[in-house]
Image 1 (cartoon, rainbow, N blue to C red):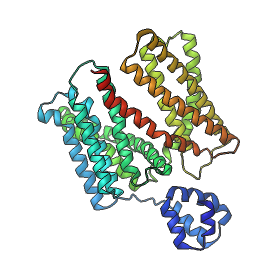
Image 2 (image 1 turned 135 degrees about the vertical axis):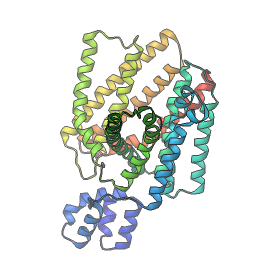
Image 3 (image 1 turned 60 degrees about the vertical axis):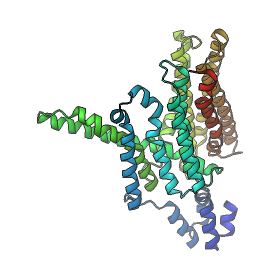
Image 4 (image 1 turned 120 degrees about the vertical axis):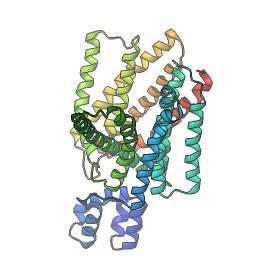
Length: 413
């Protein structure tokens, strides 16, 4: 891309084609070249175009606002199905909570990316199949297989959202990276919206209580249950129309916390030895180990997948290497504990699911560590770590599909 930008710098048409073919890569390479090209009309024009940030809030088109309002309303109505149709909440929400939000987010990006009828059909069929399958499973309480299927169904629906997000360029790692960054931005903006909503909830209930009117039950049954599904939909609308709002927040947070998490993990491992905790026989302790792995993977990704103009120092890369190595150690402990439990007490759906997830994460961590080691010797850019994570996403999705749809058939309920 860099060579093409230089060779076509006097050809506006070719530059525009380059930019449209891969906007993320074009911006990254141009910003790296800008110090050399600074001063020319071509360089100043593209610098302003690529890096200009308006302070005004972009409200998007009227059609987009209308879509967000209707999607939020319908999502809220689906969330109220148990009350409207007399469905048991214990049956409905564990199975269907993902269908309250993910299909509407997928519809937002399908509309935004102008997906073909074929791709929209794939999305609709996938969502419908997931909904029919999970609600077809018998209502067996205390079923590990059912719980696993419900949890991994969320990953399946998340993958459908990713399919809608990347559009026609699903094989492009830049688009997959963009999807992962969108998830980080959405978490940040959703947290801010929830904080604001929490403050408004407290004020509203407090004001009416001064009048002697108790609105808590009505507020939580109608206002809150419609408001919560609207949060990710509204957050998506805001991040897509105003990327400057939180675009740099998640990488900054990750970089701040990566050394802190490293110190915490080292202390935690030492504390395990000191306290005499036994991950081989303590199930809850083992679950915490596995949750740590997912969190650390997210921190590593957002630490290296920040704005392209931000360069990682050697100290930052070394911190990430140490974090990866320590996490591999944690993964090894968790993996050995799972294998021990299988050898002692036999195979169960839970143990197979956790074993598979741990193996996948271990392989991904080793790949990430290898890329980081190459980055220290200047053989590769630290941002290539993001490509490793993005390229590995289909593996996680395939495993989630197996656990969601095959485990209930293999192990029963």
